[in-house]
Length: 352
Ligand code: NAD
Ligand code: TYD
Image (tube, rainbow, N blue to C red; front, top):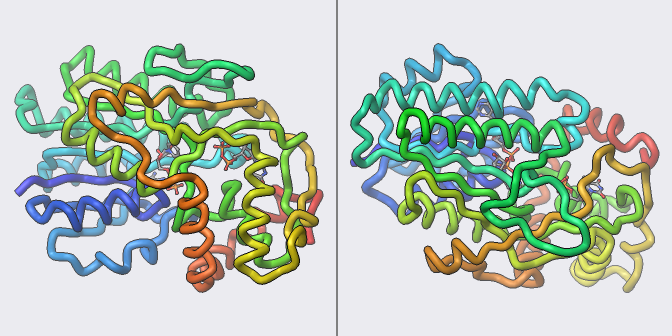
């Protein structure tokens, strides 16, 4: 039986990856290591929490001593690293938290993997999950490929870029068998409502303003989270050591167009008059260093591993909206407590 450590498995993407691995691979013992920060939520995994091949461990990847003894104890065969501070706006307020988890935490995992694997890398694999944001910003044209130079602009993307470099360096220097993926913006169930889509769904439900940064003409490439989890499964099992794969949705949207589409879907679902949710759109002060456009060329993973998204954006958004409307307790739980003070601070202009 293989022992696989998934870090950050109580978060948005991590919970979908944990569910996929626990249900698909009964021959694996899956260990979910998560510090349960504001973004981690064990409610995301209630359906599989009692599975016999699943173990949850609460702990911090930036704690060197703890990570070292955990690896010695369990002798993991594989590591899938999703634990991270993941929100750009929070990184602007508190960059050090991002250095601690994203950089130091990743290096701790690399060191602990080396320590237990020694020089025998047979059947071992370190998989680091990263973002397209490390490539910086595109103009109106072009796509990020696996060879695009790193050019991060936010403390978040700089910390992710740094962790990616460490992973590559451990591959080059110590021969550590790694794979790395850089994915575009995800959306779907269990997404914490600080990011654009779940924040706006929650605000529409509650008749609150929809704070669009700047002129709203920023572009992102959106991928349904379940399709990201499928890609992670494929890369973990079929990816070539020391290679990077870009993952994207072939699905670019200007923020303002996406928000209008979402408003239309919400009007129908909530049986509100057409155009009612759009009235909530409020343009607010721009995010500092806001990247204009991200767009991924995902042809490598498509051609080499046969991966492509399984749902269209319209289908994925519908599934997402339905999930939030059917899980109002989840939304209420995550938006109680500390969320309110974060919201008040971040959205001073539209506090209501
Ligand atoms: P998330 O913020 O929803 O979840 C992060 C998880 O990591 C949480 O459960 C949190 O408790 C845990 N965590 C944070 N610090 C930790 C620490 N020090 N030790 C252990 N656990 C810790 O993030 P997400 O959106 O699920 O992103 C997961 C990964 O995917 C991140 O590495 C992120 O950079 C990457 N990514 C995200 C997106 C996206 O659109 N969300 C896109 C591309 C890549
Ligand atoms: P976000 O979901 O934070 O993801 P990222 O910054 O990692 O791409 O933001 C997506 C886009 O939406 C980005 O261009 C910033 C914008 N945005 C808003 O206009 N208003 C908001 O309240 C938020 C959270 C994001």
